[in-house]
Length: 226
Image (cartoon, rainbow, N blue to C red; front, side, top):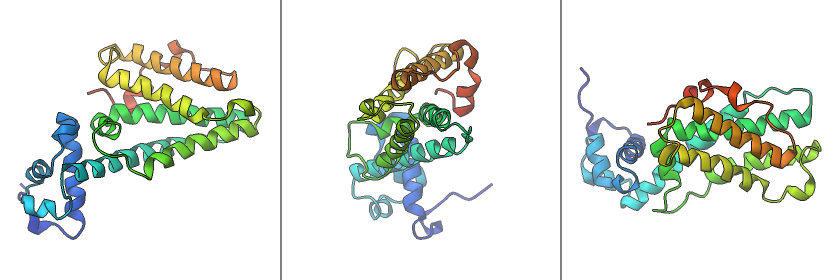
């Protein structure tokens, strides 16, 4: 059996990461208000004094957890984007890339609900880097849609915000709303519908996936609701 972790076992920098991971677990169990330096120290097995060397207060730790949450979101979107092959049709490829980003967004919300809730909670400040990185990926795909003639230029301004609002809304409905306890098949169909309507509104073309054909497998594979 491994020995309990103590502050003497941490190398430089490891304790900060361990405290951030502990903060994420605290958020998962009790929400943003549960994230505190002393609580994280207990979670890790170190003294509060050691923890306060890395985080001045609960707000400082919460910001760090938010940064980790947005990084996880960005990484998931980037990884899903990399799976979309070039179809040889720039418009079709861009449409599929936009769909992939939306599905990755909902997927990380289901896989990491604690992090996702903390990322967008009212408490604490927003990080300055990872959120723009995630939005930049969506914005680039929107530009690609315009270049391919799929998205009219006059409809391009703030299109990434509209798409973001759509997938964010269905993700929150799944975590903290009326979609939290529905059957997986119904939730999968709901996500398909949101994405299809968003694509049709932007481009006039749907994702070519019917709500019935999608099934629950796509979403259970990305993370189940907790």
